[in-house]
Image (cartoon, rainbow, N blue to C red; front, side, top):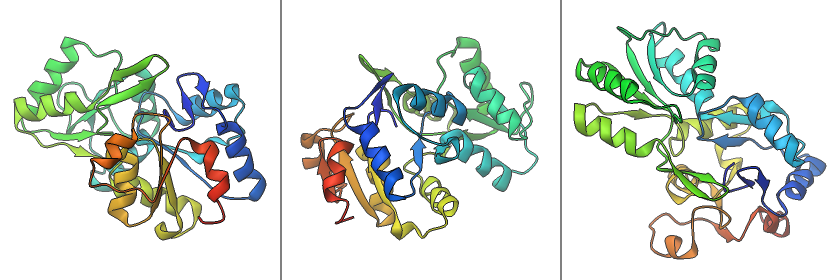
Length: 249
């Protein structure tokens, strides 16, 4: 969502009208966000403040996807979460037990409350051989005045220092796309992915062989695309330009 339909607390010009047009035409959609610092209700409230008419069920966060992955692949396992309080609360509400002393999994998320104590505890647990899972791979998080450091550098730090290899759940992992398709009751090939990041949004679409729209309202530039092996189907300035190609999609 950040960089595609809004930046911080500001909607990208034309984005509200674009979502309204999808609603009017009855075109189903899901918002896939790698941001793991808040739950669905937070994002739906934020969208509502900006004028978007969106149901919380239309939002799929990397936290939701990660919780589903842990329940499926590591049933009954406990986690040591490195994340903000809202993230921890959502993990608990998903039925995943928390254990700070001897967990089965070190679970890394975007964390504005990161401390040396958290970093060192996670390091020591990973050195003991605990499973390493991260919610998403993003290096930067869009903000109104630029970008903030995201989770990617921390993943690499822990991998380098412990030798552990992180399982990363969020985009570009196809798991999120598969969850969205299942949620909408459609085949993956019926989906068009819209996003502002080549290495997450567009790469996920490219790897899954589906159509994609790269928008230039966030992180990616035309120069980035020209120098990349990841090729979007369409390149547009923003989502406000999608309405004119809807018949092609």
